[in-house]
Length: 185
Image (tube, rainbow, N blue to C red):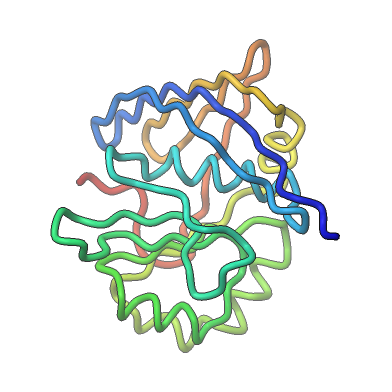
């Protein structure tokens, strides 16, 4: 029998000066058995980057054609489709047809640059697409603070994020490979 997901709880205070968004979120994250803690923490960071009162986590790695994070408007139309990692170019194009805004948050070092070089020509045409690359050192540091119960503070200003967990301070400055970030709502 396959091992079940590991549940993580996070209390997160977000102060996003770029979007003028300030809120507290109590989150439950399921870490799929095939998912690393680094990827799970990148999903949490992506939540902080695009936090709103309506953003939700997707069904997870085991569900294809589902975003890692999404936001629907009050009519049910999808405002945001967010994937973590290096998704297939074809699935990104399909996502761009389903959502007003699509974001890919890449991580893992050199692999993101190689992935972007291979897909740039096809993806450059998509106007509702933003691709971000997180520094490897930052995502590894995020992985080191992963705990079953977390209390985090996330500050965002001028496109730079600071994650505070106890005495740990992790600065994350996403590189924009395509599109724009941060943006005001």
